[in-house]
Amino acid sequence: MTYVELTKKDGFVLLTINRPEALNALNEQVLDDLDEALGMIDEDTRCLVVTGAGTKAFVAGADISVMRTQDRTEAKRFGKKGSEVFRKLEMLPIPVIAAVNGFALGGGFELALACDIRIASQNASFAFPEVTLGITPGFGGTQRIVRLVGPGAGKELLYTARRVKSEEALRLGIVNRVVPQETLLDEVFAMAASIAKNAPIAVRAAKRSVNTGVLCGMDEALAIELENYSNCYETQDQVNAMTAFVSKQEPKPFENK
Ligand code: HXC
Image 1 (cartoon, protein in one colour):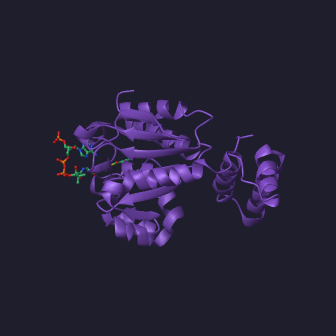
Image 2: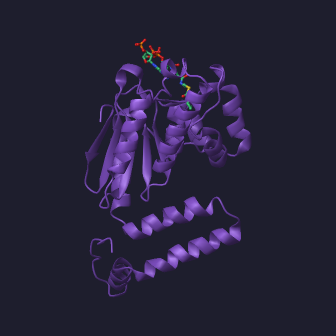
Image 3: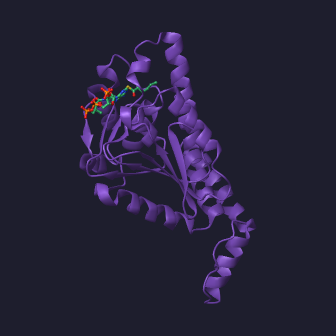
């Protein structure tokens, strides 16, 4: 892979988009690399952290020099490719945390939105500059932002292209936490590690319940949750953890079975 690096940590994986000469902007190759990298996340991985190389940008958007010369057909194909890769990311069975270390603009904002959780550095900023370039978001941003912050706040960001700094992003619910740039990765790694130590089958079940349920009516969503919840009772990890609690023993590490 040219522009994406995967680094295995203890129980989780760090994915870094590394194209600093263009503030990590997404061209075809970056999207292909991202797709390939997601295909390499193995069964043992319990959480994924996504970030951008350097201290200036998470991802400054789709590559404008590429988009500038596209016609409608090419734009649709490029949009579909990015949209599918981001959906693949969103549908990974494990939690994904975006460590937003700077500009998250256009396609970069859309990438962060496809993650489960966003932690931002103090210098991070978010915007949809698409309408200043004569286009709209095409990698899922219009759909995910309104589901995250509601239609009123989401539409304002989409229509105005206004840049939101991390503290406002926190107030809007775009990010879960704002931390200093220097400690961003440490804080995100600590969160990834705290997820990684929990029962993996249960964590994946919780993600499935949310991701599927959020698209349904309440009754169907509750039925989905009940199914995912009760399936956990077929796991050794549930038996061991509850037995350890009741018998006042030190719980064993989860075995993912
Ligand atoms: C291509 C980009 C880029 C981008 C930055 N660069 N963003 N190249 N596409 N999206 C390149 C610059 O051309 C420059 O290259 C280098 O990165 C450094 O950027 P500068 O502009 O010199 O840095 P600075 O002055 O600090 O400004 C940072 C910035 C600005 C505010 C982030 O670069 C910017 O506004 N970028 C565009 C952001 C944007 O509009 N993104 C949304 C794109 S639309 P050189 O070679 O000159 O050093 C989109 C649609 C998604 O994402 C949906 C598609 C289906």
